[in-house]
Length: 156
Image (cartoon, rainbow, N blue to C red; front, top):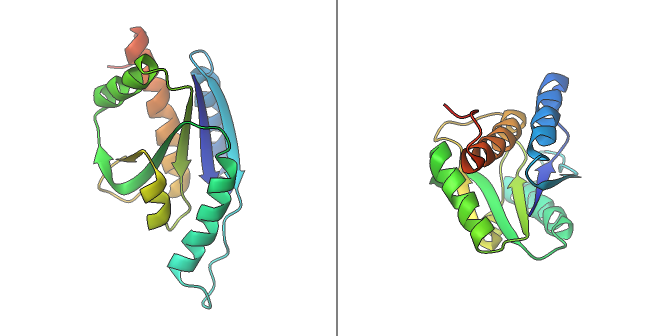
């Protein structure tokens, strides 16, 4: 199984980027991992949020080259506990899913078109988080899910 994270824009905070990389390394014990950074569209007065998100979606979709399951992270998605998330990943493993594309949008989120193309739309919380922090939480929760699946004493 391979997890490919597609992040829109670069991580702005070096400390958060280091933590993301720490969890990516830990996650590599369980699955292959890849990260693709998609250029973030400039926010200007001449462009609507929809236009910005649609441009970013085009770039995201160009990154998703292999067939697989697309998971979009959006505040309007389905909220799961850590154990429910682990069960979902476990189900993907049992069903032979080879590639999982984890898509985390920019500061203004993901387009409706991207959400419609996703196989799963998940939410971290009904709260709004900075997108850098969202990346960290998604990677950490995926690592946590694998420790739950494998019975490794990380999750409490």
